[in-house]
Structure formats: structure tokens, C-alpha cells
Image (cartoon, rainbow, N blue to C red; front, side, top):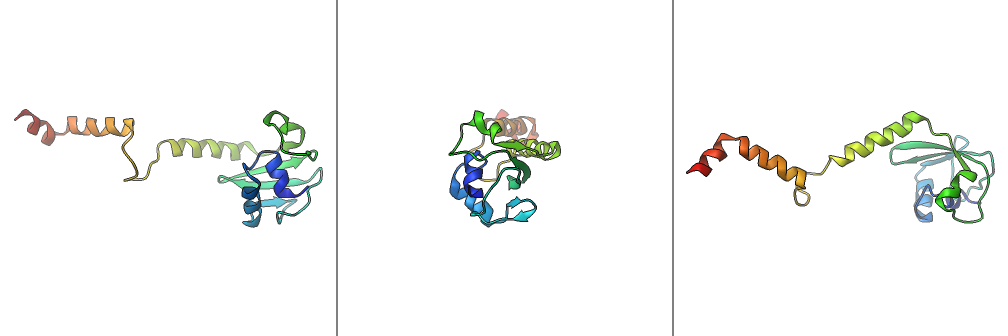
Length: 131
């Protein structure tokens, strides 16, 4: 099976075209070497996938017939990713929760409360309201 199809089958990429693009960009390595999307995958191969700033290390256990359900993925691939890499993913999730580019869209409820708090604590705005 092709490496792009394999990564799609084991649900590391949502579509096969995204998996192909990752291979072409050099984000997929097999046994230490960068691979093209058409490279064949065999059991016992080690695949390194860089996705979302995290390096995943996968070991191929078996080749599936087609795309798998999420519960069956463990029969075909062993995830050997170090815990440090997965902790980096958690940090990325936390940083994205509180980050929003300035000037994009309306303020969130949290932003609105912060703005109201600034207005309440500022003497300039409290004096104008009393007049």
C-alpha cells in the first residue's frame, strides 16, 4: 500500500490529498528517509510524521484493506511517539485557546468583560458618567 493511502487509512490525515501534500513537503519520513507519496509500506516499517508542529513516530503492524474505524486503528499501527512530543501538543492547544489576532471579528464574552473592567476602574470614564 502507498504511504499516503496508509496514513489516510489509519486516520492520521483527514483526506488522502492532505496526506499526499504532507509527503511532498517532506513531512513524512520512512525508516529515516524522506519519502514520496507512492512509496510502498510494509509491516515493521517506522514512519515519522510531522503534523501540527509535533513529530509522531509510528510503527506499521499490518496493512489495512481500506480506511478504518477509529477503534480498529490500534491493530494496524503502534504509536511510539515520546511523551515530550505529546506534551508539546497540549501546550499548543492551551496557547490557541487564548489567542486571537487583533482586529479580527467581534470581541468574545471574555474580551467584553475585560473591556468593561478597564472602563469601570479608569477615573476618566467614571467622571464622565457622573456628569
